[in-house]
Amino acid sequence: MAQKQFKTESKRILDLMINSIYTHKEIFLRELISNASDAIDKYYFTNQGHVNSDELEIRIDLDEENRKITISDTGIGMDETDLDENLGTIAQSGSLAFKEEMAKEDKKEEDIDIIGQFGVGFYSAFMVSKEITVISKKEGCPAYKWTSDGVSGYEISEGERENHGTTIILTLKEDSDEEDYSQYLKTYKIKDLVKKYSDYIRYPIHMNVETTKVKEGSEDKDNPEYETVIEEQTLNSMVPLWKRAKSQITQEEYNQFYKDHFYDYSDPFRTIHFNVEGNVSFNALLYIPSRVPQGFYNADYKRGLQLYCRGVFIMDHAEDLLPDYLRFVKGLVDSQDLSLNISRELLQHDHQLKIIASRIEKKVLSELTNLLTKEREEYEKFWNNFGINLKFGCYNNYGRDKDKLQDLLLFNSSKENKLVTLNEYVQRMKEDQKDIYYVSGSDVNLIDKLPVVQTLKSKGFEVLYLTDNVDEFVMQSLMTYREKGFKNAAQGDLDIDSQEEKDELNKTKEENKELLDFMKDSLEEVSEVRLSSKLIDDPVCLTAGEGISFEMERVFNNMPD
Ligand code: ADP
Ligand code: MG
Image (cartoon, rainbow, N blue to C red; front, side, top):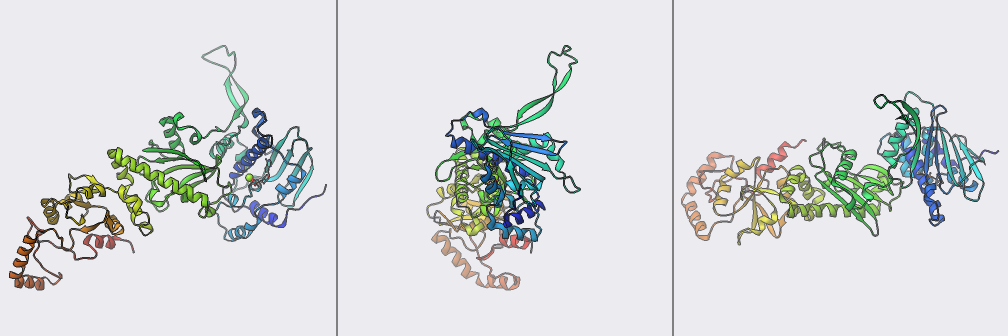
């Protein structure tokens, strides 16, 4: 039997694969299971659904002694030509250059999802195998056997298999100091991997599992006899929670799912589950945590959603699914319109993904708006945890998102010392008030005591108390809200006096000009000394001129260089 060579480019990719620069070797199982599931899909469709669904299954068998893992399916199978063409070539050879580039730089970063990137799914099995045998049969054809060590080439000969489908037998590499391949021969490891990557594959993944049970007819109930039996188990749950009807899911189930998948021991604050059908169809299950996640403000905090494609887990932390200002949202997205081979690098440019991301953004914002209008107290809880992110969102990206976010902002205010929205402020503004007044400071109580605040309050004006470092940047980025400007009341002049009051002040100013000039010259550090109507109880105050305020100066001074 003649040995066939892999196509040159395939061969080079294989070399790279075998001497893998890729760290997540375990994904080979995901790849083989997803191929098996695709093959069953094809079988199902070519027979137009006239199949006995009991027959449709994926099986995994472990043979520890001989270091073999067998994955078989009852799918469409491959004939001689299919085996030659599908397993002899690596389809997307155009990507070879990139792969070599990566290999050169010896990048081992998990972020480089090389396997996923180039559709070399089947070949990933060579990362863990020293030999692979594929036995496959198409309905109405003889069975064939394909064997390869992944290095020298492959052989195809006649094989033995009764029914349609494919059996893939991996002989694992020997363990080394760096790599423990034997772990893949352990039942619990395979169970874990199936749960992690393939739980929602539509067809059952069966495996014979050894379990210890109370022997049937065991006489003595208090001291029963045990026996070891082998029973067939289904490793995957098949129907993902997010694909089930909302009405059939309890909050308890949502909460449990959240805690199992998103590293939190508290129940989520809000669950957002929705489906979109249309140009791009997807299911999304999103959660807002009830507390700030650990390490949330660290530079290496990983944001983003889990991405599934047709029920197959593709990646964690897909950042492009969420705008940065929603980085606190956790959850997952499952779409049938994305390619299983999509990678982080490609995601950024994926048109479908952009549509999904924009729908998610809209949905989360509308949920937050709802919460704000209908459950104010709850919204304030949310705000205390994550509001700062929405503030950042207002001025990041050159303020591109500020229009979407401005109505969700809350600020402390002189009115009853409560959090208020800009809308609430504007609604009750005095008729002739042109600007929204704010004053910055480190603490609400200190701001409240400022002379200018006392004056404004006594004249019936409301003042926003800005206590976050970012607040003034937010105001500068917004520039206006409902055509009202923002005015730092502690800075420059406020046009709040009546004409009479103004005349009076001017008169006093004229009369005391000499004194004021003398004070200015003596103080040196100030640019002007003037009379002010901003003071009520206090004799004097320092004010910043127009431009950068004292508070912003403080923020700048505290910034690392
Ligand atoms: P992809 O799944 O992206 O096409 P793979 O490298 O995973 O790439 O598989 C290559 C091809 O080999 C598949 O497209 C399919 O035609 C064939 N194949 C792989 N596994 C099976 C299987 N279990 N049954 C039938 N065909 C398979
Ligand atoms: Mg595949």
